[in-house]
Length: 194
Image 1: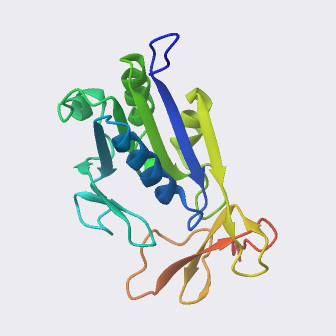
Image 2 (image 1 turned 90 degrees about the vertical axis):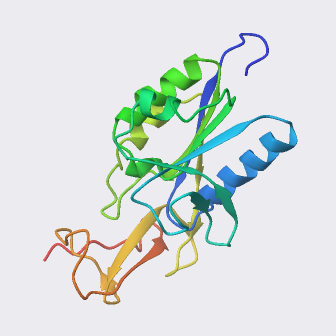
Image 3 (image 1 turned 90 degrees about the horizontal axis):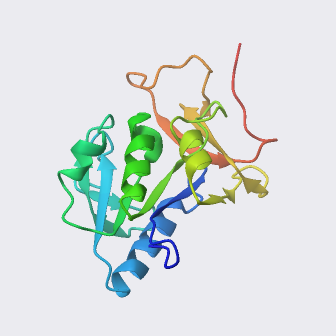
């Protein structure tokens, strides 16, 4: 809580895949816990890479979380809270725009709200609802990875299908296809449109 105004706020940690967003979220949560602040962490139920009830980073760190539906609103989140002053959401890009109002209300109730998530999809387009969260947040940090092609700072996420850059019209999942992701800079990021 801001000491002078006794108000809450919203922090957004964003950037491409492999840039350290979740690692930074976990660092902030550890510091809040060290400071004796109660913490509640939410993750979208559709993201089960680290288990249904956990947030995890690529380096193996984990934090217990509450899985909620991506379209959860303030009431759905609030029913899981027990007075925690720090409320975090991982993979904010998987939530619907209802997350924006939810975060606004939590901050309005005097809570510190931390959201991490991708700012751009694999096409290089804004990944909703992150642009709206960035606009209303008091604090925003954009992290960069290292481009797997040239070594420059990477701000984009390259979707690969069977080892090749994805086509702009590729569906989210291709049956039998091998899907992977890489961090890329603006110059090396490729979207097939043929």
